[in-house]
Image (cartoon, rainbow, N blue to C red; front, side, top):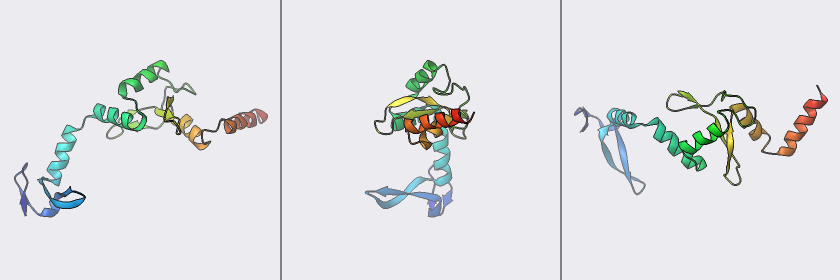
Length: 142
């Protein structure tokens, strides 16, 4: 048994997260799991988390993302739709966002795309020759 430092309730050790030091279990947190989660939820900041994720994945922050979107008139860079069609950001998926399109070899950000355009580029393996053949095919079968 251990007493939580937040709710002051005695609870079995299974109700506490283990701490790890040098990759090995070391002891237990002072807060029980439910208090630990509540504290983390209260400290969660959607904007800071989104900014951190964008920087980590694509090397741009929220300001750069918003600037790119503004430069694209708040539309998909390819099909010009204003509907991102599927991607939800934030805890609980509260906000629809455009996908950050980037070159998978260099990591350079190319623009912001809706779900359909982003997936299409992914499905063709970023191969413009395949895209040209798709256009020819569609034009032949009008």
